Length: 119
Image (cartoon, rainbow, N blue to C red; front, side, top):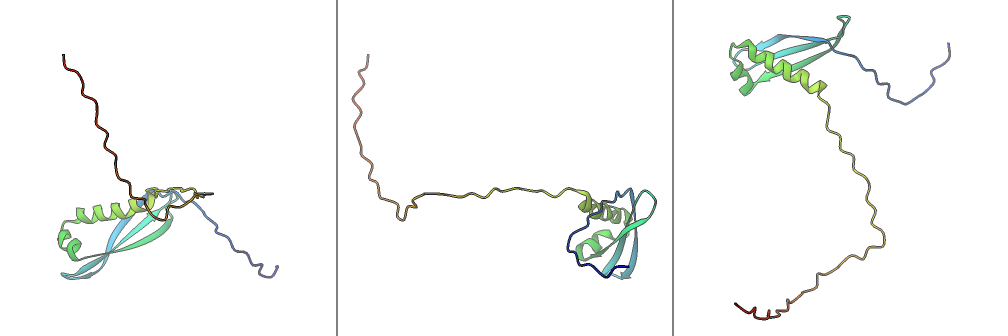
């Protein structure tokens, strides 16, 4: 076998997620609860496990309504698959432009309009 050969690059692999499950973990009564969200591929392999702490106002809103946890889990998963907004900005190069150091004071000139004849 060859010795280690140094390289430096990003290897990016795309995995299609087809389902997720969530469950609750550590509960600190009247304070917080940990929720775990597991993402699976088409072969039912666990791809990633997310951890989400629910506390404060979210904990109070949860109460005992587990559908609230379903909504939080769905929002966490949606954060992963929504495409980020990409804005491309081209470099602008100003060439041969004279910059104005001071704005000159301009006094408007008032010119009377000739009277319009009435019929």
